[in-house]
Length: 122
Image 1 (cartoon, one colour):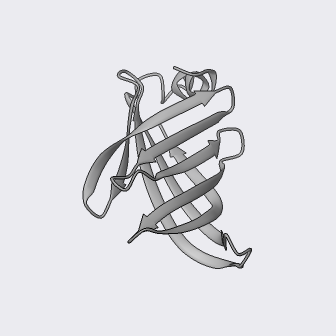
Image 2 (cartoon, one colour; image 1 turned 45 degrees about the vertical axis):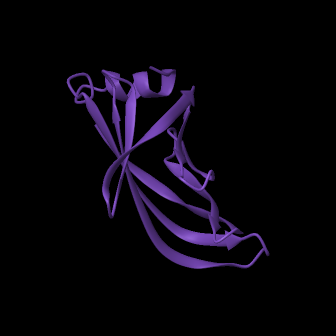
Image 3 (spheres, one colour; image 1 turned 90 degrees about the vertical axis):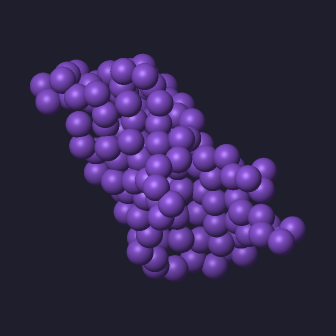
């Protein structure tokens, strides 16, 4: 477990918790053409502190993702069947987050980033 997650898990409530929930709300987005604007986009992750497994909750249910963290940051990586990767990085100190989409549909790439914050529930 990373130092940042240890801090969360060591919280009086987190010490008993096995799963940490991250509810992320993104309010700004930018495309690869530097077109930026407002958005209303949500992602939810679950991180099991006892198994170090992470999951994203989406329209199709739960999907396992990879979790990486050291110090105050935690990143979730989702591998798509197209070969693309989507990542979400959360600053555990202030809950700011960025979600990067690297999507390939019908051999066309679409890249974008979303900016927002995550609520952390232990």
